[in-house]
Image 1 (tube, rainbow, N blue to C red):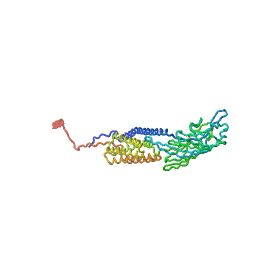
Image 2 (tube, rainbow, N blue to C red; image 1 turned 45 degrees about the vertical axis):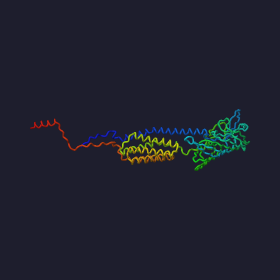
Image 3 (tube, helix red, strand yellow; image 1 turned 120 degrees about the horizontal axis):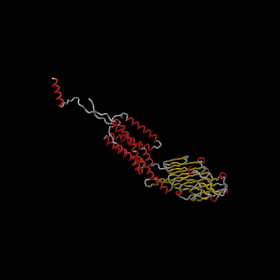
Image 4 (cartoon, helix red, strand yellow; image 1 turned 90 degrees about the vertical axis):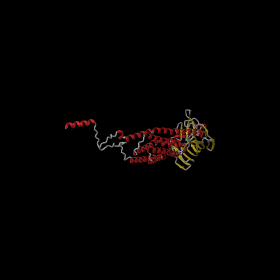
Length: 459
């Protein structure tokens, strides 16, 4: 008994390895549509920013309140005029912020109005400044208050200066420190001291900051908003955030910033010490969608890996085009997520897009394998992967921990189910050709004649 079966060729011996390399190449190919989806998210995000900027410019921009400060022009020995700057000894700011949510097209824009009270006291240090009172041009002395966007001032700014009420006007005298803002002439007490109180009603967008110009700066802010973001150079000393409001308190001392309380003819970057609060959106669909797109290659790789093991274990050939079709379905998930989230929010969009994608791919898997158990198993696996990615997106602080644990468990499952795979076995084994156990002697006419001649010679 013998067989005529040829030895397996290189491809048959290494068919699993070759198919695995092909699947890996297909995963890399799927990076291309992933880049297009990522660019689409960035484009929509840029569109949102353009709408926000347009509304903000018409309402009022981001506001930073700097001041008040004294501008004291003085004559030098050479006869030139220079400027001395004096910051308040004490500065107390209190007020409330009223958030306003405007809708433009598909996007929400955070705006606000605010009523602020600024109180404090000045004490001009003539000796420290090496400034003679007689050299000061008191007729040109000004109190200056800088505001980020003057377009946002909604009422006349009333100033109570040493008990006398007056109003501040737009514009500042020529100086090196403040380019635009409000100012008003002032009259100092004989000892160079003064008290002030300013009522400031402004509107703005997204955030409200303050510059701590006082030797001691005390700020108290409240707002009917549950998702504040405290930002800038200083965090509040105390803050209380409730279900629909918050309060915050800052106390800033001069040791914590790098500019003096008074100087002559120099320039300091006062705004670098600014701090305040941002009224952020509690849910940003684009940032979450962008994070989910970053996990696309991981999701596609895991799905293709599961598909690959189904092909090996069930001994059912799957064409590369079928892999690509599944990959395209996984990619279109992100366009569904992006488009639906603009109307229904991220969580609802993720649920709808994932259900649609799971159903589509599961039916396609059933049509390939014609096995209900396999289709159900693939459905559960795909749903589990979508749930896993959703947890990673939602838990930003623990994404690395959950991601590492999840990948470890997935690898353990793959190693367990692949332990019995014969990686060097040929992909296709040919059956032996059956042969008869008896011999068949065939003689032609020439052989028979030769036998007869031999018999005659012997006789």
